[in-house]
Length: 197
Image (cartoon, rainbow, N blue to C red; front, side):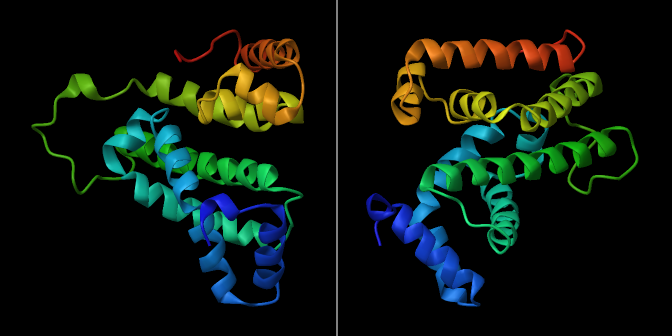
C-alpha cells in the first residue's frame, strides 16, 4: 500500500490486526507510514545535537518504532493524525533516553567505545544545555493537548502556522494563540529559560 492510501480506515485495520497477533500487520503499518516517520525522526534528531553525534537517524527510528508498536498493542489511535502524534511522542522519548545516555557518558559514568582523545572538545555540548533540552522535551509532553499538538507540528514537524490551521481546522490566529500559550507555559516550567531554537 502506498503512503497516500494510508488513511484512518487502513490504520484501524492494521492496528486491530496487530492487536489480534497478526505480525504482518505491523510490517504493513510501518511500511505505509515509513517515509513520514523517517522524515519526522530526521527532523527531531536535529533538535538533539548530542544524540546526532552518536546515533544515526535509522537507529533512533528503530528504537522509536519498537516503542510505537508496544503502545499500539494497548491503544487505538482515533485517526492518522493521532497516529503520527503518538509516533512523535515515541521518537521524542527515544531521543530523550539517548540524550540522557550521552550526558552520562560525558560525565564519565559510562565509557564511550567510539570516542577518542583526538575529538575536538569545543563540539561537545555543555551539560547544562543538554539538561535544559531534556527538560524542554519532557515539558512538551506535559502541555495541554492543543498546545502540545501545535508545538509538535511546528517545532518537530516543521509545519507553518497556515498548515497547522488547515490540519486542525482552526484559524491561524488560534494556532498563534496556542503557540504563544505553549511557549509561556514551557518558559515557566523551565524556570524562565528556553533552549535556543
